Length: 155
Image (cartoon, rainbow, N blue to C red; front, side, top):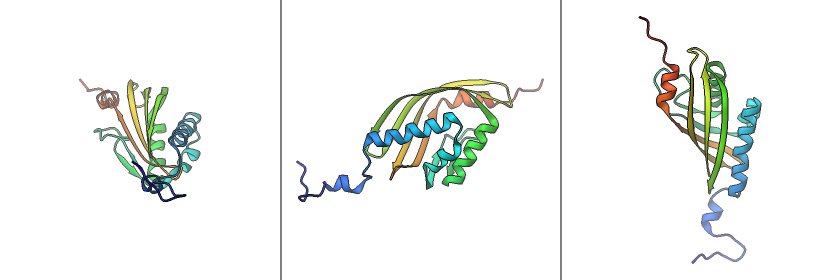
């Protein structure tokens, strides 16, 4: 049974952000809209100063790994623009609990240097703090990404 001091929400509500789960989903959806429209500056403005942006480590894939801070995230998107072209990018479902928003989707990319394409379902896990993105983790089929970045072997 929950109890609260009259006029004050229970402690578990007071500790976290006052944003609803729907508000947090809206933050993520706006981030995707900024990405899709190429407005990377607006996307970076949606981040906390200490944001942690993390993809799996993949050998010889420059965009892989962990970045911190707005400058680190800006570097990530600069690397993506330099190395890849989006063919399809579709967040399909959003699930939120407290400060976490999980996005399930599908994308297809073209790797400029090798001329290869890859496709994968993805899971994006966002942490929202005070209306801003404080954390991002991405999960996808890293084997197809690694193969797309692999340079042709010389005979």
